[in-house]
Structures are given as C-alpha cells and as structure tokens.
Length: 372
Ligand code: FE2
Image 1: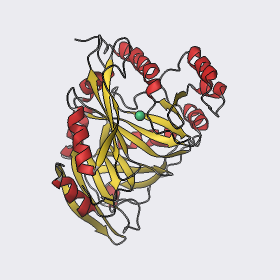
Image 2: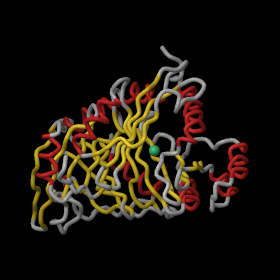
Image 3: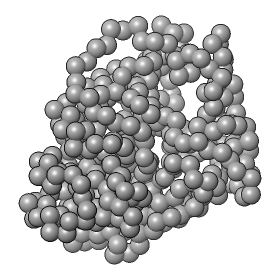
Image 4: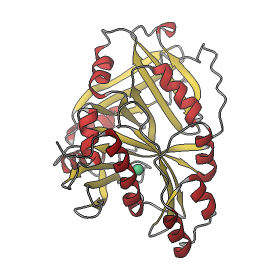
C-alpha cells in the first residue's frame, strides 16, 4: 500500500455494559474521568444510554440498552458480559480509509455515514474485529458540540470526589483470540490498516511453570501512536489465562486497554486511594533485583515497592507498569497503567512472569486453572 491512510491516533473506546450509569460512576471515581457528555432519551436517543467520559486525551464511552429490543447491545452483554465493543481511530478522510481497508481485506460493519445536527457533523465507518468487536474510523473535525450528534452536556448533577490520577492517553489495546487465530487477526489488521508486526513472542517466550501464550504486536507503519498486541493460548500443564478469558467472555475480544501517565507513582497512589484493586504486589526479591540491576531508574525504588509498580528494561529505556484486577464481574477486561521512560517501546516482557503468576493465583481462586 503506497498511499498513506493518515491515521492520527486513538479517538475513543466504547464499552457495552449492563448498567452504563454504574460503569460511568466507576470510571469517574476510580480513574478520575470527567462526565463530559451524555446521550439518552433526554437527548433524543430512545433506545440506549451513553456516558462520554474524558481526561486529557483519554476518551471512554459506556453504553447500555434501555429497552430489550436494543438487540445490538443486549445480545452483546448477554454473551460477553461487560466489555469493549469498539475502538476508534481518528482519521482525516473516513471514506478513503474505509475504502482502502476494504480493498485490502477488511470486513465491513458500517459503511461511511454522516451524522449531523445544528452544531455540525461527524463521519464514521466501522470494520469487523475479532468475534464481536469493531474498529471505527472517525472524523469529528466539523462538529462543535459534545462528542457526537445525540450527545449533550450531562443534565445530571454528577460530582464525584476522587484523587487526580493524571491519566494522559491510550497507549495500546490488546486482544485475546483462540488458538490459531493470532496470525489471522495480525494479518487482517496489518493489511487493512497498513500496519506491521513489530514484536513477536513465540513458544517459550511468555510462560510460567504451568501456562503459556503466544503474542504478536502490530502497529501503524505510518508512525501513528497506535499499537495492538494480540494474544493466543499456548499449550501448558494448566489452563492459560487466555483460555480462561475466551471461556468467560464466550469468544475472542479485547483483554485490556493501557493508559499512559507521566508520573506512575502519583497515578497508582491516587488510584489506590480511589479504591482500585490491582494485581498482587511482587515479592521483596523483585525490588531487591531492581536495586541491584540499577538500569538507570530515576524513580525511588521504595516508592515503586510501596505501590507495587512493575519495571522492565528496554533497548532504549525502561517502562513502569501495573495492571488492575478485572473491572467487571467476569475475569475478562482490565486496565493497564503505563509510563514509558527514555523512549521505551516494549510491553514489559520481563514482567510477564510476575504478572502471569499473579493472574494464576486469581485463576486458582476462581477454580479456572485446572483443565477440564
Ligand atoms: Fe499491555
């Protein structure tokens, strides 16, 4: 593909959930997101309710059906539980990007369409992703209102006291797929969006004593800040966490969204104060190793230890990260908080062992670790 698509970056992530109001409250209280927009019967949208939540460049939409006939939402939530329905890419020309994607093999979900009101218009189109998700192309440059036509400033009085988390933007969005689906979806995204595979974790790269997975990371060839790891299970003695996700989500879908911060110590301190549960803290020996290796880490290791933050060295720099426990009722979707230091580009492979052993402890509690 010679001509550039001009993808600018992530625009928003939309969840379909059982109760949008409760999910909105959680995002406000736990992540410190603001209630920026609301859409529902009061704004002329009769069949669903959506809250548009923002902080810096983080844009999250949570949507619920308000009628059983809103089949698109109710059927999703019935099958998958609360989860990510779509993530959107901001593009300068929706028609062009959609047509290029289709000519390179993308499966259409919604053809380009204008949505307008007295404040202007937006253009949107969508292609299929995984079992039941979508990648949206959107241009909101010509709309002066809140988010999209159908949204307005929330009429509810929604003031929630919380610590400022300083979350900045979406860094990457990860999918979990079935055995033998990783290459299929990596190739699909690469050809549809002019992406390339830039990191590959094969057999033996990501495993604990008991379970394993394979992973490929695709990213924009044009330098857009969009990266998408795709995981599939790999043979192990026990059930892989990817298999657990597939079983509980009833299919393939989005596993986590990583959000950046410029000061992870302050962010995790605030999120813990806001009541967010994170994966369990690594043992003291983990931080002892960090002290011994040095790695030019500028942050105070005692602070990293206090808040349970993980650190991994990279070719060019280092990254600090931490993962929340699953947000909803099923052990499926969670958030990652990440700070990239000195130009680190990776995903914390050095932490996978600590991370997965922590997830395995939770899998055992859920009774999902032994194979059936
Ligand atoms: Fe991640």
